[in-house]
Length: 425
Image (tube, rainbow, N blue to C red):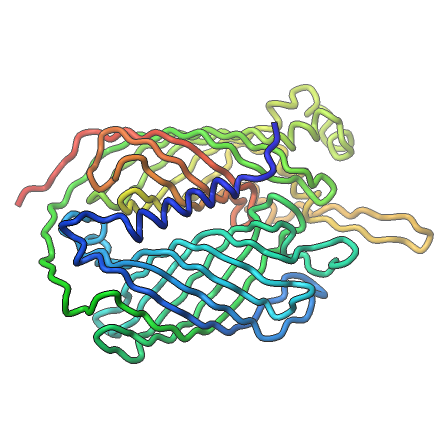
């Protein structure tokens, strides 16, 4: 069974994140969770995604961010992270070439931290991760040199450093420098991705004057819990430009580790994956299987699978988890063919014949065959701030071979926490 894509469900998850981080609050702490608004103008440069990429002029962006402070007696995660701001950004981007590259409309949940506070007052780091609608894509005939974007819905990421230049009771005028990225997570090829560098001017406007905040910082005890986690994932990707139909990737994973101070989650585990594209390529005895590994057809299911080990780290922010995994592929036999198909190229001879050149199995291939990565968001059914013994979650992630997207995935999972250990004074 094939689905058009999973981004619609990701948008639902994004809206849940938005609601949870911007509007959900308890009456007793509402004064200290006041909303703020940030209108922002950005100018920058769209970087070339490939050879002969369409020429672009100045990139122009408009963003509106809605967020809140997290000064609360009940939010341990906020206290542990020095009270970051959270919220959501709505953005419009003109990449500087309306005909060939077009525009993007983005929605990105974000978290913003104060950095180097003891040395530079008013310096902040904001990280946003979400989705964008792109109105212009690669077309084989009419837009063949824009190999950056081939789908309308894409993953988006932004990372900016802001400096407060001028402050008043209700408004902070800020200057920012940062990076923006858009790509589809290997759900259609070509997918070079759009990368941009930009500078911004913005105004953070408080809904209430800062003088109205009343807050006494809580003193949480150090604590830790062991946990066990199990998840099932349904992913989607394409194999190559010649096998460019979306097919599924099924995965299961189990992990265990420690949750520290109800905020930082560290662990390790095991994953198993089955790639439908790999299975079909082997089952159909396609060219590279017949030429190089004919024995794969004796067990197409086995050779279409992958398993390995991974280390995981996660920030727990109430109902939200921000997760990054780094893994080691113990078994991924088909990746040799995957690499040769995707890193190769073709050219036409004068007699009209086409010559196919396969990707070279060099040292870089060995690294990417070995190292896996995973980045995404999770939404927990019960607030992690209450350290529930049982919890369930849904997640949206990008899985990668080192830094190159492998597949986009939605997952459901279950977490069990063991006894809580507190350090008494």
